[in-house]
Amino acid sequence: PYTKDAFFAGMDKAMQSITSHKDDRIVLKVNNEYRSISVSKICYCEAQDKYQRFYLETNEKLLVRISGTELYKQLFEFECFYRCGRAHIINLNFISKVTPNGVEFKNDIKISLPRAAVSGLRTAFFDYFN
Image 1 (tube, rainbow, N blue to C red):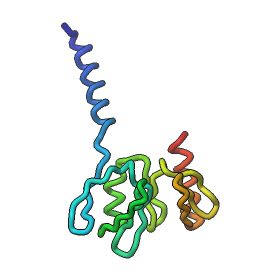
Image 2 (image 1 turned 90 degrees about the vertical axis):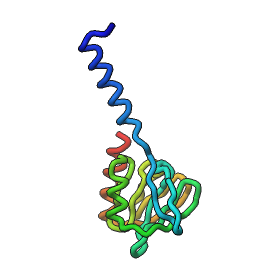
Image 3 (image 1 turned 180 degrees about the horizontal axis):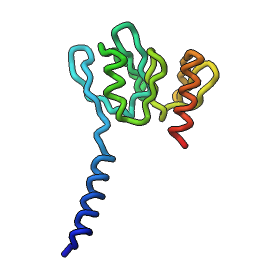
């Protein structure tokens, strides 16, 4: 037997657990087929005209026809992503270090970024891990 307060406290705890374990996948159209991609495997995305090139943890590269704004709307709910200007969306979990000229990832890939973008990224990186 549960009291009414204990029941509602348990339900609140269960709902928090469910919402904190949201699905970490997005579905993208890649070469005329739909693929389910785990967002935790995305290192970063780079804008290329009307496309986004995805760089995955496995060193696989995917080219997807989607605007940076549309993509960021999908990734916004995941706190680990930061939009660096118009050209890059970066997964903060893969950053090894932020340099004055850009960013270096754990897989030794380096990308150059505008000075203003580096400043915002540095703040986001620090806030995310502290």
